[in-house]
Every structure is written in structure tokens, then in C-alpha cells.
Image (cartoon, rainbow, N blue to C red; front, side, top):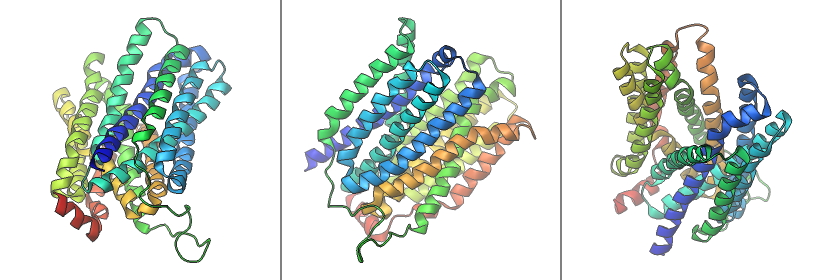
Amino acid sequence: MERALRVSRVVTFVYFVVNGTLLGMWVVQIPAIEERVGIGHAALGGFLVLLGAGAFAGMQIGGRLSDRFGTRAVVPLAGALCSATLVLPGLAQEPWALAAALMLFGFGNGTLDVSMNAHAVQVEKAYERPVMSAFHATFSVGGVLAALAGAVAIDIGWGPATTLGTAAGVGLTVSLVSARGLLPPASPAPAAGTEGGPAGRKRAVPSRIWLLAVLALLVMLCEGAANDWSVLHLKSVLDAPESTAAFAYGAYAASMTIGRLLADRISGRFGPVAVLRHGAALAAAGITIVALSPWIWSALTGWALFGLGLSGCIPQLFSAAGHTDPTAAGTNVSRVAGLGYIGMLAGPAVIGWMTHLMALNYTFLLPALLCATAAAAAGIVRPSPDRARAVELTS
């Protein structure tokens, strides 16, 4: 049993890497696909909303399927779907075809995202100690692999269809081959939307889930703002050269990856509340430095602190959602992840709208406020007494 558990943990890492790589491969090919289809930045922004809408739908359906049939059945099929649909944007020749392709790819990505997170909750429960943050760190590793592979493909002259088709084939193979290592359901789960008692009775959604979802929205709005505005901040506000400005996102992403690799140990020793509270507070301090600093070096420090602080927040929220009701882990994670994803998409747009009212650097005081709110509400991720005792016995 211990060997099977170790294998399942490794396999879960694999699916997180696959998801991060597939999404990263699309991102690397955006400029080439945009030029070939003949659309501008504004139209592309609208198409990215369609990708997000597809992902949101995939999360909701994937969560319910995971609870109904078990993550062992859903995760490999979701990985195969996400892989197969990756090639579609590379084949699109017309705007309408790209729009449809992105919706389908978004659906596959969302289905894989929520089902693999639900399985990660199952693995974490079996380990009886925090392991969620490390899974999210390997998602970032997948993005790095995609950037490297995409650069090589461009250098050797591959087009989007060849590059994405090759990545799709690798992802499809890895997703199906890795399926045997996934954990089977601990016990038969009731159909989503029902619970014990009278047949057909609706399962009430715990208020805790909606609070976790709101916090996920706030935190991922901050992540979205960093993804799209960190480099532009250094370039346009502090007049940094483009090569230097790129380090803003690099500092943020690298510190987030490092933080996620460390967060499980910190959570195991001090608890998830401490990770969320102190992490969100550190993120608030970091982005405040970014907002107020007139120096490039201190702004880079602020972006690094922002990434480090945010690194453990989302894994704690997803883990808390999954453990609230193990028989509805997939559905609950989909609710939290879905609302969080809306925040990720909204973050860049909100910051952009605020730049009509104030300088870009001062708009970052909004993420500072949101992080402070998350820090104040961190008690929501406190584990139940039974789970807390189990963690104490294994630590």
C-alpha cells in the first residue's frame, strides 16, 4: 500500500507537469497563431475570454464527474482530452475556427485541472500530511518546459500545427500510460448533488466552500495582475530596459515556484492557517513595495516577495475545499477553482481599467488590499479536529 501511495504521488506530479506544459505550449505559440489567423490584440483578448469560459465549464463538469466516477477514471481521460484539443488552435486558419478551438482546449484544460486537483486531495488525505503545494510547483515546472521546448521548435522552423501536434501526442501518451498509478476511490461516492437520506435530496453547499471560493477569487486576481502587468510596470513606470523589465515576471515566478516547494513543510509544521495568513501578508507587503518604490532593484524585490507570499495560498484553499467533504471533493474544488479562475481572468482587466484613473503603480494597492483581506480571513482553512489530530500523529 505504501508503494502504491508513493507511485500515485509521482503520477500526480506527472499530470500537473502535463497540464502546465500543454498550457505553456499554447502560450508560446500565441504570436505565430495570431499572425497566421490575421487578428489583432483586441480580438485575441476576446478569444482568450472564450478559452476561460471553456475552462470554467470544464471545471464544473470535471468536478462532478470526478465525484461520480472517481478521479482514477476522469484524470487520464481529461489529460487525453486536453492533449488532443491542444492541436486545434495550431490548425485554425480562420478567426471562427480559432475561437471554437480555444473553447474546446479551455474545456479540456479545465477538466484536467479540477480532476487532478481532486486526486491530489485524495493523495494528501492518504499521506495525512500536506503535499498539495508541491503539486502546484510542478505545474510551474511544466510552464518552464513548455518555454524551452517552444523555443527549440521555433529555432528549427516548426510551425504551430507541428509543434502543438507533437506536444499533443506526447501529452496523450503520458496521460494514458500514467493512469495505472492513480489511486482508486477510497469508497463509492454518491452522485454529485445528492447525499445520504431520502433519494434525490439536494446536497447543501457548505458556506465554507463559498468563502474559500471568494478568497480564491481575490488571490488569483492578484496572480493575474502579476502575470500581465509586472513586466510593463518596470518598463513604463521605472523606465527599465526591456531585458531588465523581463526580470520582474522572472522574479515573481521563480519565487512562487520556490515557495510552493517549501510550503508543504511549513504547513505541516505550523498549519495551513499560518501559510495563508503570513503568506498573504507578505504578498501585501511585497506589492506595496512595488507600488511605492522609485527604484528598479527594490521593485524587483517587491515582485519576488509578492510571488513568495502568494505561492502557498491557492494550494491551501484547494486543499481545504477538497477536505471539507471527501465525497464531494471534485465538486467543491471545482467551485473554488472556478471562481478563482474568474479572478485570474479579471485581474489584468481590472488593473487596466484602473489605469484610466491613476498611474499603473498605484493600481497595485488594490492587490495589496485583497491580500490583506485574505490574511485576515485565513482562519477559514483551519482543518477539522479529526484531520488536525491525524496530521499531528504523523508529524
